[in-house]
Image (tube, rainbow, N blue to C red; front, side, top):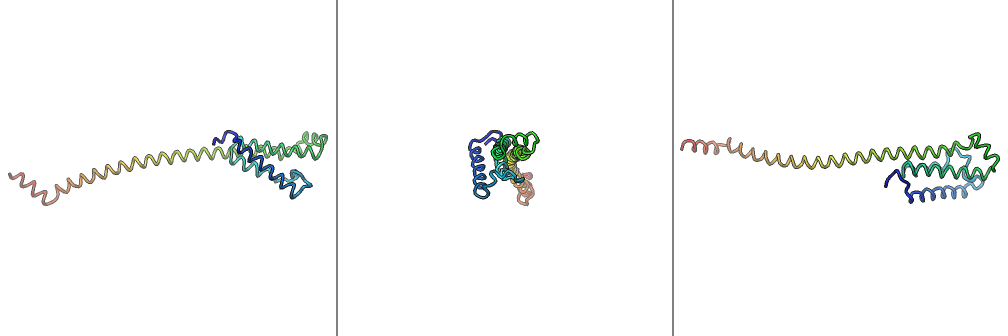
Length: 170
């Protein structure tokens, strides 16, 4: 799976995670839809999972989805006049922007780490090939060493010495 393209299956997972967070919100705290006033927002978990699983684009899309949900819920809660006033003052854009930036940044970290992992896997494959080459070289050197030992033993052994001496005397 390429980390630089949006995986449709992962998009469904992100959507399901957002739906699960919203369902938990409706079960535990129905008076505050979307947990808008929470600073450490549960949507950050969805963005974290998506960006670390899918990369930059997936993290960015998850952040944009979370920001859209938050801004939509804020609009529904406050109405148009107050909503526009808060947007002009940048009061409600801090968390949506954090989600978007967090999705892209964590996705970028994931892509960089994946590139390092791929590089290390390539190094491991090259080392395995080198190891096999070295094994064949060691095997041929051991055969040559055994052959040289046999010749050296034949020249240094008493039987070999007597045989060569007798051959010279003839």
